[in-house]
Image (cartoon, rainbow over all chains, first blue to last red; front, side, top):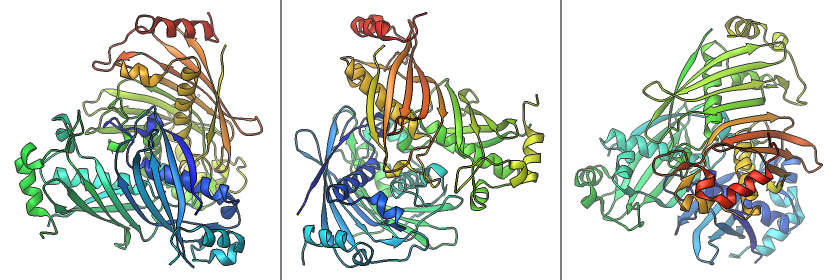
Length: 141
Length: 141
Length: 141
Length: 141
């Protein structure tokens, strides 16, 4: 199983009046993690969109363990939790600088056409990418 | 069970290049839903913070059913799913103008002190608020 | 000169660790002001985009006078500062609940085609809209 | 005059339905530029806040020349435009990968106490920092 590690510097604008990163930003960081993972595996999400496809999120689950603060750099660890015919689940762990876990999460995605939002198989759109995801998934039920 | 209904106009800045609302914004709308629910039940979250307490999110789960677009107005339905000694779970349904469901979600919160992030009981901090939440929760296991 | 008045409830997510609204959000509120102004004058920005046009911002100037806080409702006053052949400038005043000014601003926009970002004249695209803007502008040099 | 150069990867969440970076995000990138500049000059903004001070924005002016897109990396060039007793102006140039200018901007800041938002002199709070800013400013009228 391949795990991408992406450094993300906390932005001032990402904090809220609690003095910590607002919880909605972790979804954005997870997106940065996916972008990095895809790139490190040899593909690009921007390219997929240029070809006429989108990979919208259909489910997200996040567990907030300990808050991040401005001045810190997070490490977003991203992997392919499972890759089925029509659904891909990514797993995430967001770490503090000392390695303790700030957040764990999963997000589930489908692949659709840009014009009509109709589901398509990654195995048809990009068989190579599909093969890599099948090989690198954590769960192989 | 009391259900709050909050209208939220989709903002242009909330869209992304998919042409729909970016999925991270639903977390912000859920926050608007909670703020409205609390106010309609006779309390204010701003007041709770002014008294030295915070209610950070510890778990979020979202199911994206169908995308919202700029030009639309969402209805965020928010209720108290369950209210235990230390944890409160809110339930959400975000609706399109025609009443179809765009998103369903839950978020789990704890109450902590502002200074040290130490858990406190709502029943100690604000017994009246605690009583209303206990009465209005959906699940009463 | 027509002035639109749009109420905007401060969102928790819009605050930062200074305890006030992060300054980037005023640009989003100004966008809400434009959307409201256009609608009140009988047109829709969503409709303009559906017809194949965009009105990107080319200049923004903001003066921050006093900060807004969570729990407050802002009033965004928006008007047409000037409307020339190719450039439209909007004026803004964002007010606290007591009427004092939080922020003043202007933003300058051009109209372009969606596909190629080529400048077009509002007078060609929508002569009625152009006439209303010409009539309602504050500056008539 | 010292110029900081900060690389910023465009985030998917930063795009809007125009297919380009939403104009409000440039304010956030400018903040990243300031953070980097301050750090490269040997200080930290997080440290200044920890000491009980804030440096809120009082004026911003942005010129949007050409839009940035997802998949690109921006370079945020930041410098001290001028540093007077009570007001510091930062200058910015945001560049595409090929070096063409996407955006130019300035932002003006004051230094205030965290508790009461009362203006203070950087020369009193941190004379060393004040000396570096005085030396490195572009305009020395």
